Length: 237
Ligand SMILES: *[C@@H]1O[C@H](CO)[C@@H](O)[C@H](O)[C@H]1NC(C)=O
Ligand SMILES: *[C@@H]1O[C@H](CO)[C@@H](O)[C@H](O)[C@H]1NC(C)=O
Ligand SMILES: *[C@@H]1O[C@H](CO)[C@@H](O)[C@H](O)[C@H]1NC(C)=O
Image (cartoon, rainbow, N blue to C red; front, side, top):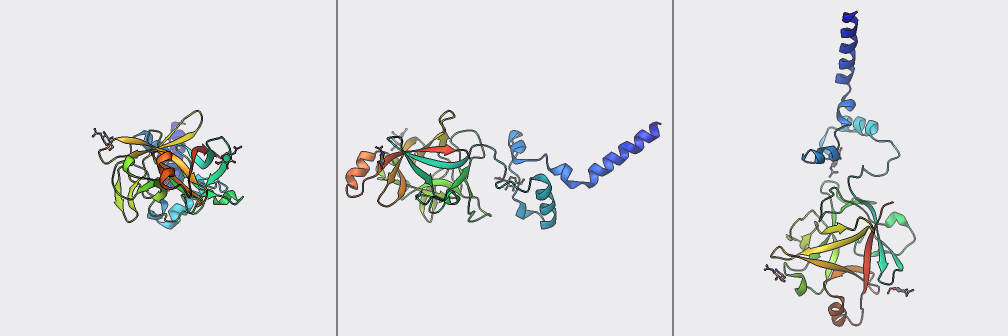
């Protein structure tokens, strides 16, 4: 009797042991984050056959995006008077998608719940899978916000502090969200480490989304093509 149980137990252990998928499906980035571990490396670092097996078994084949760990969706832009202007476009990200094709809407995802957080760009077109890209800002120089006329939205690599790049000084860890309204708010890190709120604005003439510290100052310097104040909301669909 007990030898039968031992044989059965041995068989179960054997089956679990030879099935690599059973061992790997529980290990997600989310569970690793909870335990304070780093995120798992992207699949291209593993050998192709193992990845194909694990991916096919771990995810339903119809899932269009990787699993979400925080906030994710599109960014809906509203004018100050409450009327919808559209969604932030995938490329270039500092513009509104003015064609009625949601395939061209930018899709973003946060991987952490603390604030400020990064918004990783998920698609529709992942330009460089080796280096994850984020929705951030680029400043011409590393100077305080009140010395900049405007701060464009941009696709950047992860940058928790102002970081020199070929575009200028980039920052990606700038976002916060109102958990009730889902309004996305951004903040600029000044060179001395203090933070200043970034006000989102839209230039309808150039179809350009950008941030300012003070819209009246921006518009007095750009009276031919003034911008309007807008608000960003995360649309979780
Ligand atoms: C999370 O884990 C998956 C593999 O399960 C990996 O493809 C992905 O790149 C990881 N990292 C992030 C930041 O999502
Ligand atoms: C709301 O503001 C936008 C942008 O300034 C403008 O195009 C639109 O006509 C306004 N709508 C109303 C109802 O005032
Ligand atoms: C940091 O820089 C900002 C922007 O220039 C300025 O307003 C603030 O007073 C500075 N704070 C400190 C503690 O130096």
